[in-house]
Image (cartoon, rainbow, N blue to C red; front, side, top):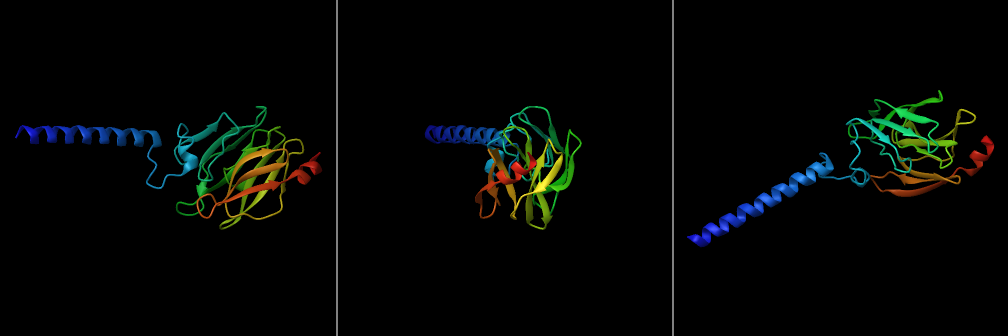
Length: 191
């Protein structure tokens, strides 16, 4: 009888440990469901999409195409890109909204997955042109205009913009394809 009591006690302790581990995991992921997206897990300290504003103090962090609200300062801190109340383009789909820059520039139908050039002179912006289709816009801070880069994409998640090369992933959830987009020629036209 005592042996059965010890087994029950051990079973109870094991269950409590498992419950505590589960509770800690849920706290760390802030409610991410079974299909965990790696880009959100990597920045779990930030609010999840749809749950407030993402304010990235570090411009080298990438922004998910599912975010609703973003605020991203240029590396030199002179210009801020903001998007509020972006909406899903379909149920569970990425978002689209109006991108506003603190210098007065703005553009509709943008994805929140933007990235500043390392020298703060340009901003790369995925722009929705139809269901499941994007073009890449380059915003010049000096000329205060947007220029369309060649090519069409399914869904861009941009990760970096250095020396005229924009890196990212096209379609991060379904058949992801790593992309490197050379926009050096476009940048030279702005100078």
